[in-house]
Length: 368
Image (cartoon, rainbow, N blue to C red; front, side, top):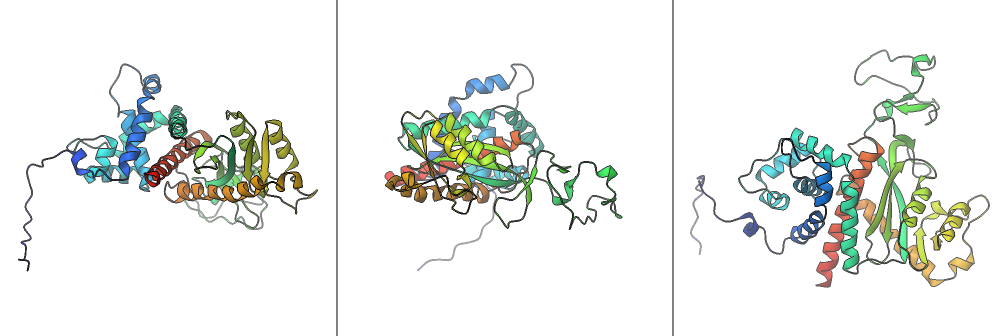
């Protein structure tokens, strides 16, 4: 039998024990924190280049980067909510490096300091260091890759997509109810990226990823994964154009230290003769899904499809959708909150590094 306990609500003046003691040794954030700290230690020289020697001390860039990773790992939708969580969440304080009594930054101060990191190639170097850790742990394949792209919605609405010469457009006069959200009717109006442009994000383009889908303002995010562990080994973000996916794939593969002949799995959107020829020119075998409905037929013939490796690549390439699913749902990259290819690409690269950290932690736990 148990005696009823008393619900005594009395504030304690002192709390004993460090944050390190409060976080369980088996917590899944511990191995991620270890990998993050290892990468940040090698980035000290880059941080010294970004920050001047004189002036008021800013938020340490190491803490900024850890906080941004937390925001992605826990799907926190805003910096203000992130700061609120860090105010009372001891786990978040431990991961970022704040003590239990240390003051949390104001959201505006956090975003201003974050912009300094956005102006430097911090996420690219951090991503590269995470990939090098995976290579040192023998988790990567240098022979078999998969490439794909996905649409990243821009922080701009359809109403902002207006004619470039809208001041002289007799077919689309000014709306009768001016204001922040006027009534606009663009139905039956032919709109294209050549004649229209978003007033909110001029770099964003109207694009639809698949036939029959709704055209949206956005960018294209590209990832190159290896087929052994499904880790991202390179990433790009470009404007949304019809050739962007194939051009980004060549760009990512060209920089890879491929010592022997490699293979590349991809969907049928990459099945063009020009792309296949460019792959073979850089010693990469195109394991691209055949598009038999394309005018002129598929660029992939039985010389490629008869090999067993082709079927393996076609099975493995579907795992790239797991990457996009995590980036869009967990890391909240489905719709960006930034503008311009450089800033959106910076955050997209950091989210790919966060995915690799989670994937590497899971692979190590499974092997233990």
